[in-house]
Image (spheres, one colour):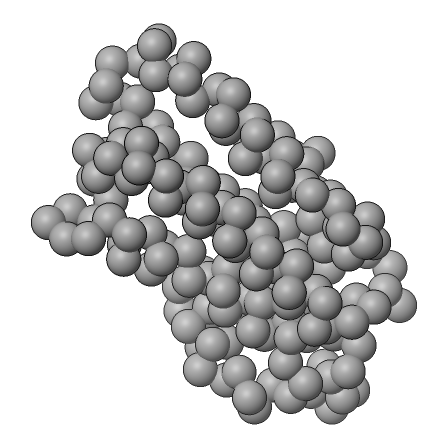
Length: 177
């Protein structure tokens, strides 16, 4: 996953409809068949699973990195639009990995061992869903459980992610920021 595309997430172009996750998905669609020929099946399946995990972490940490690198006065034009865009990105990633071929590959790669791969996929992707909820919140108290989950799941990265989700919200009060 290339940093230039990931670093474009959450900026003004992204907020204006830039389809950066679509570019990432198109790249994966292009590369996975080539890599499947090159790698033995066992390693290919592990590779696909790691790409999913890597994409989730890179997506949510992109907000931390963006918030730390943008000017202090920048805020999302609309927290509801930003939350909607995050959920659109979530759905694009989910839909790609829910394709029957990807589900079978993820299962062979160890995702959802002994259980439902789709449920395991949704569990792994939960930080993106919760990020959308935090970004879209008008008050921090409304998403306290979500914040706690992100902090627990993502550790130190979670602190920066939540801090910047709040910082970039145009409607959150200064006290909450």
